[in-house]
Image 1: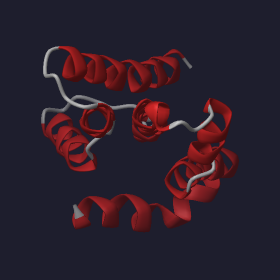
Image 2: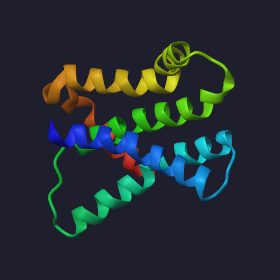
Image 3: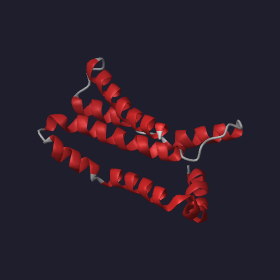
Image 4: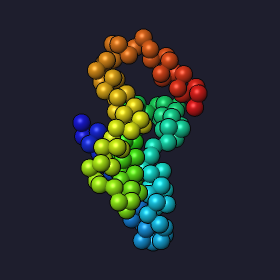
Length: 139
């Protein structure tokens, strides 16, 4: 649980810091700073898989839940950066937040986490070759 809270916290803090640095030091406009902050807040799946491969070759064990942490970091990273970008557009906060949280990307990430949690390891085992092995092979 501590790892999940840390992942969500980093997902919020990273785009906020990136946005502030880009606005203040880089003198970027709101939209440009928010777009770049979203990229910094986003998690690279390729980098993640490369890290897992490196750790596996080095013989360093990795907990099975780390993949879920990637999705946990992605959601707040996207939402925070989009909120920052839309803040100056005249839209109300509640309306903007509802639109962001019900958007396709956020719903798919949160829905995938919920399905994975509810199905548990026993139900995941038969489809693991498709979602684990094929995923790494495609990347």
